[in-house]
Structures are given as structure tokens and as C-alpha cells.
Length: 220
Image 1 (cartoon, one colour):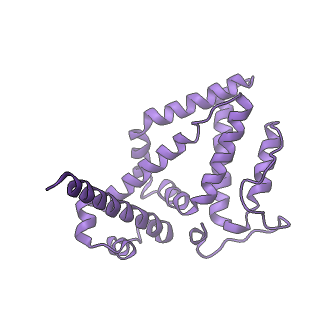
Image 2 (spheres, rainbow, N blue to C red):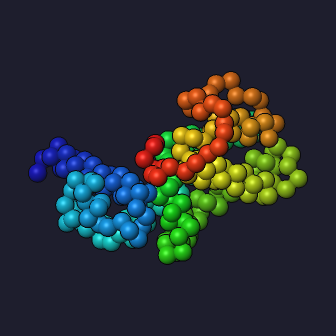
Image 3 (tube, rainbow, N blue to C red):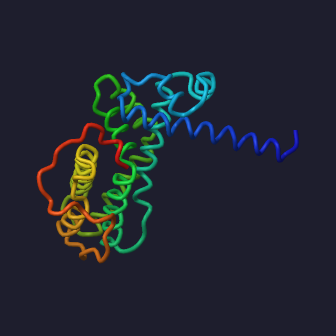
């Protein structure tokens, strides 16, 4: 086999694997882990059951891969530079924009996190990514230390709680959630400069009662 053919085959295998993972996110977000079947994922991905089994022997193995990627993405939100205020503003904006663009991913991860039957999967993923999560926490603490916080660890917990709470609401209420207005309010809470540009498309106006949709993951 020529090097070009080997490379092409490797690319095809990687593309198939990514298609399976993308389909798994959609199916798990829409049906939940327990209701979703491997057949649902094969149909969504347009691949054979044997191909899924080749890469992921079990549905749990699929969930493990998805959770590892999710936690790696959370860690990556802190890859920013600048003054403490600039870094904090960037972390807030990156977290909110990521939540907005990947609502189906957030719904999938939240479902695995809070369901008692799958929480051990989430806990195991956090254990595998302990080094990254510890680094994330330490960098948040350092950020708030540089901003002169009295309790940098508590501030890190509060910021993560705030952003994760917004993500939950965004998943539930989809396009009804006034994300841009919330973003500007968070900036003001931390005494950051008022954003000059909108992060996303214009919010629904005015911000009013929110009602859950039947399939919040369907709006991305």
C-alpha cells in the first residue's frame, strides 16, 4: 500500500469515527443515555453497527469519549491572555458563546452528569481529566487573586456556578433565553468594561417569560 493510500485510509477512518461521535451527541441529547440505542446512533450516523462496535465496543465507551472531549473543551476556555480583566471578560464570553453554539453538546453532558444512572460515568471522566480540571481551578484562582479577591477559590466556584447555571437555562429555554443581556449583566457584576459588540445575534426583545421547548437541543 502506498503512503498516499495509507494516509487516505486513515483519513477515512477518522472521518467515520467523527461521524459516529457527532451522531452520538445528537442522539444522547435528544433521547438520553438510557433510551438511546446503538441502532439509533448507527441510523443517525449512516454507518453499520459493526463499524460503531469497531471503534466503540459499548455505549458506555461512546459516552466516555464524549465526556473526555467535553471536559477538555471546558479546560480550553481559559487559554486566553491579557490583563486580569481582559482574561476574565474573555473567559466569560468564550463560555457563553460555546454554550450558545453547542447546546446539544451541553444537553448531552448535563444529562450524563445529573442522571443518577450515568453520574458515575461523569465522575470517572472527571477522574481521568483530574490534571486538566485541577489546572483549570488553579488558573481561575490565580485570575481572581490578581484581581484582588479576598477569597479567590470561592470566586472561582462562583464564576463556574454562574456560567454553568446560564448554560442550563440556555439548554432549557433555547432561543427564548436573553443571552446577550445576561452576558452584559455578568460583565457589569464583575465591574468589567461594557462590551462594545454583541457576542451573538440579537436577543429576543423584550426579555420576558421563558417556557421550555419540546426539544431544546434541536436549536443550535
